[in-house]
Image (cartoon, rainbow, N blue to C red; front, side, top):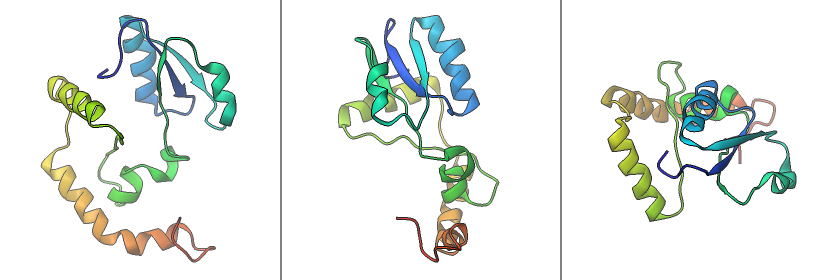
Length: 138
């Protein structure tokens, strides 16, 4: 919501987390934002879905629902729900931060402490995710 205006178009992976799909279809659409849900394995074919008003590509880590979200790797103990947003530019970072403050979403101190606890056991847990390879993911 920090990056969109009425009339914008976004590309969203078909496998997006269900509450995010609802955000897109029920809330953003009410404010004039249209979306195309794409197969995350589409590769270069995503170029065919770009419209003149496409302003956002929503992506996610492969298999994020099953193993690669902050909830799974960083948290790691099935007692915290977390995610992350990665941006390249300070301007986008500022817009996201300002929207977060207005909307009121944030991570609680308890969730932060659970994530820090999870980081302490990450080196022990990761090799168990890849036992046949005997190595950490690259």
